[in-house]
Image (cartoon, rainbow, N blue to C red; front, side, top):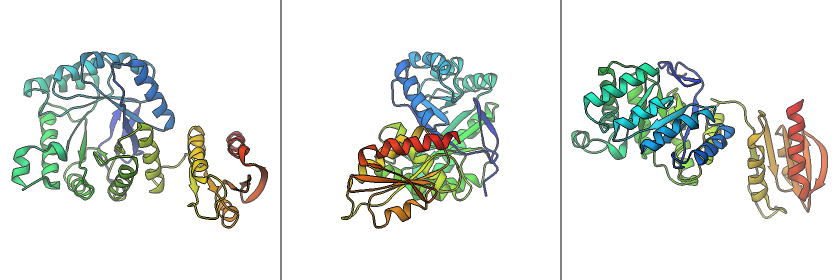
Length: 351
């Protein structure tokens, strides 16, 4: 059962209160490069990204928000560190949310200035802590980086925002240690009802990071904890969106989107199944259907397993079958298999 957190609007989206868990990512372009940043956000949006965050290390980056906002359709979050003036400029230029660390953007006066401007623009503030930046006094207090220390640090930052007179807050509490991150989320959920942005930080490359994120997010989300997620990967942000969608769909927390299943390769495989499965996964990314597509590579199990999906292909010896709702509907040469599958899916979309 989902935890009933506080409802917080972010641009044209809403999080908390049992609403849909939203997928976030972060651009890796220079925000000052408006064309590159917009192009990347549009690709992420098409792939299923719900909220996008961009770094604001310079005043030029903050000013770029005004133009970027005009050309995208999802909320744009400003990631600000060290200089409160960058937060002010990002808000003035249309940021739908700001991510700050209240302890490193200036003193209480500067923080209050940021909070007051956020309040006047009615945008939320995300605060939080990563295990790699836990305050020295908390590391000393708890004898190292611990879930208790992460929780206390996050709550300290929340209190700073509250003391400045604002409560539209989103909390992020992350660690690269999966079990520590799980424990921290369990602890903070017990003492606050602010919505949580969930992720395993610095999780690694696509393979390691996806696995660590899937394990950690599953343990957290399955307890009803979490309102937005990011799968943090060292790689193309598009891979973050793909992984996040699979995690949410697997947990039954999202519907929609095509799920591709494929058999493991073995000595019976007579086609380049690895390449074909990847091609299918990329090919269906822009088709808004709630279907299961099977990609099978031999005559032993392929046809039978493909029949378990809504539509599937089973291939071998230079030709392949299109299997729809359990029935073989077409036999085509292997070279035409991908195009034939896409044609069937697009026809399905129109029915």
